[in-house]
Image 1: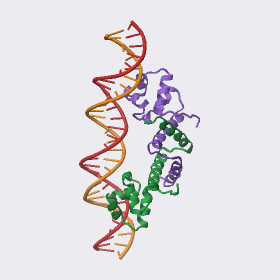
Image 2: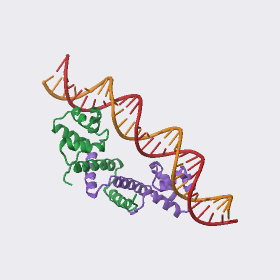
Image 3: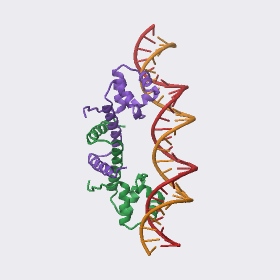
Image 4: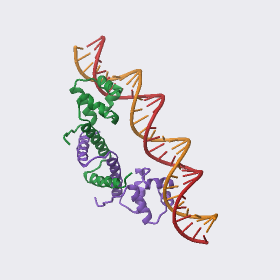
Length: 105
Length: 105
DNA sequence: ATATGACTTGTCATTATGTGACAAATATAT
DNA sequence: ATATATTTGTCACATAATGACAAGTCATAT
C-alpha cells in the first residue's frame, strides 16, 4: 500500500482528468461512456464500472493493481460509511470474513 | 463488542432457532415470512431483512443493539469476503470512510 | 411401506435498484 | 453574447433481490 488518498474514487478520477487537462467529453470518449454519466461518477452519484479500470489505468499510465486497490478500498469505504460501521465492528467483520473463507464456496 | 461469533448471520439464526427448539415454520411465522425463505436465509442464500431485527431480538430476548451489530458485521464480512479485501486495504478504506463523513451528505 | 413433519430447492411474478442515453439547465470562459 | 464544459433530470431498459408457492429430499414413527 503506497498511496494514501483520502478522496473518493470519483474525486480521484476528476483529479487525474483535470491534472491532465482533459475535458469530461474527452475522457468519457476514451472510456467509452457518456460524459454526463462520467460527471455523475466524478460526483459520486454513479459507480465506475470495474471492467473499465484497466482502460483508465492505461489512459493515465497508472499501475493497474494500485488503481484496483483504490477502487476496492473506495467501495469498501462506501459500505463502511453507509452502515456506519465502527472500527471495533470492522475487526469482527474481518474475522467473520475469514470464517467465510473456511466455508470455501 | 462482547460477542465473538464466527458464524454467518444465517447460521446464527439457525443456532438460535434450534437451541430454542423452534421449527422453521414456527420461527418464520413469528417473523412473518415464508419458511422456505427463512431456510434460504439460514443457508446464506438470501438476506435477512434489517427491518425485522427488532422482532428477531424480541423473540429470543436478545439485546437489539448487539443483534444489529452482529447483523452489520456480517454484512460487512460478506463485502470483505466478496471483494477479497486485505487488512491493509481495509485500513485505507476506513480512512476513506472517515473522509466521507467530512463530506457530510 | 407409507405417512408425517422438517427442511431444502426451484421457479415465477413482482419489486427494487442500477445503467445508458439524451435533453435541458447551469456554469465558465473567451 | 456565444461557445464550451459541466451538471442535473428523466426515461427506457437491464439486472438483481424478494415474496410466494410447488415440489423435492430426508428422517422417523407407525
